[in-house]
Image (cartoon, rainbow, N blue to C red; front, side, top):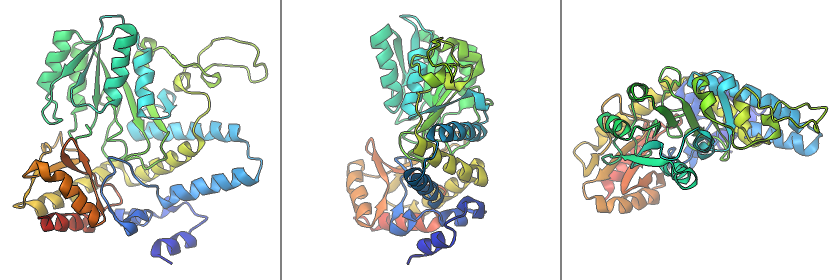
Length: 399
């Protein structure tokens, strides 16, 4: 029996997050660290033992008893929204439970009150979840697109402002952390948006839970994120935030029973009376297992503190920078503090060999991503210095 199995058996009926007081404690909740060196949380992250415990407990109870699913979903959605709001500095009523980041972005792009010829701006290096939802509005409604130039995923604020001003853009859609690791300074970006009367839509899947973001402080109008990456949750779950200041500018375009103020005792009294909270934008039947898993992860983030998680990740990156100095590898990420993120991009001096490097690492049971020709290091809260030294030793062995 492994140490993790012993640990799990001894605490099978407990909330394991209560025992976490350090990152060393948190690491014990992730058996993935026993099977490989996993440094690819920007792609997806594995579940914790606490998430697994809660999922199994629910599945067993629902399988063997007459558990009231509707009541359970209602209650967990309510508590989950409160935790989501705490995580990003929002209010519970402004949270929308979604199926994914893309689902959230489409709630905004489908419903925002724009006319043919109005412009939405986004960078030319955004992950497709942003461009495709907006390109679809170009097809359906004649919305105009303006692309902001970037350099290897790095987006400069002068280019953002110029693009918004020149095109009289009504919306800027941008990632808090780009999939190539550049962190946008949302405080500065939102000031630009306010200057030109432009709404700010943020894709936060590459930051939620690992990189601090406060939607009120940064004046974010709409925020969307998903569970399968840094949030260490089941796929098919996410959440969004809509600022009360723009609620009147976004129409619900998907209508469900639960998005209406309906009379539970009189379903046939049809009145299209939308709810006044985030549920007005939700699908009818939520992802029960997804909500269970995401609530578990958020509790862990809140216990450790996202600021502390971010500092932990940066300390692991610092070790990587130190260990790779003078080697055949160069850092491609912007290391300026306000743009540094939980993702670090690097490359072999001969970029054409990066695919070989990735395969070499996988032969050593070390997993990182290859994106747009670059190597991507995405350490999370369960990683430690041993994982980084294993990675750097393998890189130094590459010939």
